[in-house]
Image (cartoon, rainbow, N blue to C red; front, side, top):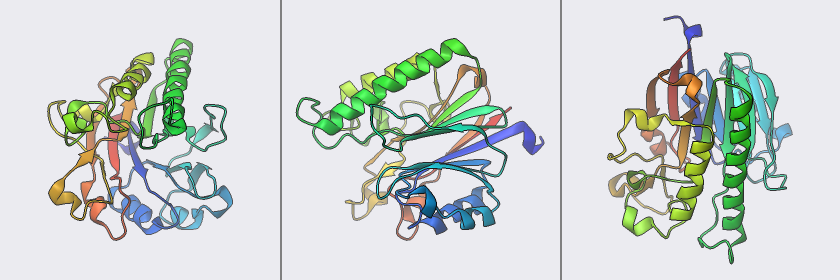
Length: 269
């Protein structure tokens, strides 16, 4: 099958693109996605390390960054069209960017983490997270009514929705990222556009699947107390198109790693 007939998309919370630019270029070299979506770049646009990325063969770059916090970017070896960003919750946080590659509209999100206390009455960060998810659901619900354009959503969505998306369902029910109120909002976003949870097409819901392991664990691999916070969704126009999904767990062991592992999906077009 010619390359033009597939789209390979990767997502990775890189936790500082400048600090881990060698990790970025290693991923591009070893796995050669058509498109890599980064979150938590922590980099203003004028300091983004474009030179190293373009040298790796990824000449098409769109980004939305800010100093020290948040930030998203799309790197591509195929042309990107119709790039834009959307702001949520009346804030200027750089948490979304989109562009079209090979006719597929790609949305890259970094959903707020939500702080430590899962109570919106006392924790402004948690309230922000719930509002962000509500606005995502509303936006995608309206988009569904307008067009059947093939779409993919990727990113650090900061919710582990399923029982086996966390190392212990019972112990994490009151921990931010797996609380029932977050899961409910997350499911509303999924339902608003009839999104397909692509990694769970390949790993059944009753099997553990993680993409994040805390820095606090001395031996993250041995304890394996992970969560699935990084997601890839496809619209119904891509139903049946997903060919494969990989979670690159080994990247969590690279020198000075991100606490997230990259996730890669390939689609037939």
